Length: 261
Ligand code: MN
Image 1: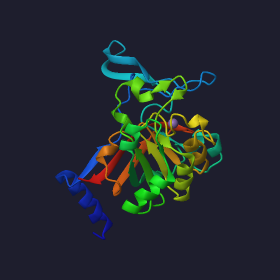
Image 2: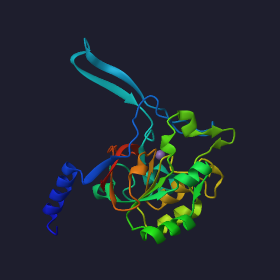
Image 3: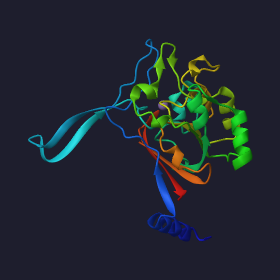
Image 4: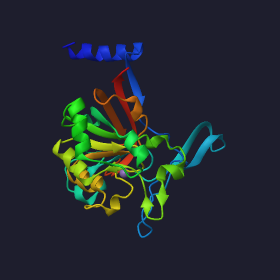
């Protein structure tokens, strides 16, 4: 197994024979995909729409293609450091400048599904992560940390966004949790909710800590993930493939994990 080409052969054999599997962590992207709502004084991000260019008709008898319109942060998507003002001067902070090897990394999955079912404003804390580390080992530098909440099982858009008079209610990381993860030097933080921050995180100090602090530290975000319940706590490899938009602050991403079956 020490020969790298043999390692790759083993992976391919494993995928063929089912001892290694791929898990798709990507939600389908379409007109029904829910989009984050900002307070009304700010500009809103448009959801996904498409217009037919031609569909086997006079405009193009042999082919079908569409023009699509959407905000960069729509559906399952990748946040770059340049998404937030705190990360605007970080090196390699846009989609086209992130080194390609950063798009493959080990992944730690923190299961907060029970806590999030009991409390829709559940916050992941350093204490929770320390307990996780006691069971599964220290979170390695350069790894993704994904917060499993089972929020992706809310297939109704209203239940998914969970907007109330005082804003959105959904679980996410506490300020101290994000500081802890930066100390661990993770690659980034990902969630099953519409954004990487908790629904009520506009009340935190700093506001939206996963954006403010994580991107300020040059790290990435992943939002609207699914199928985290199919991943082990450690041992899987995450591949994130956003579009290579010049100067892009984020994009819909195809994200999948390779894991032992
Ligand atoms: Mn985003």
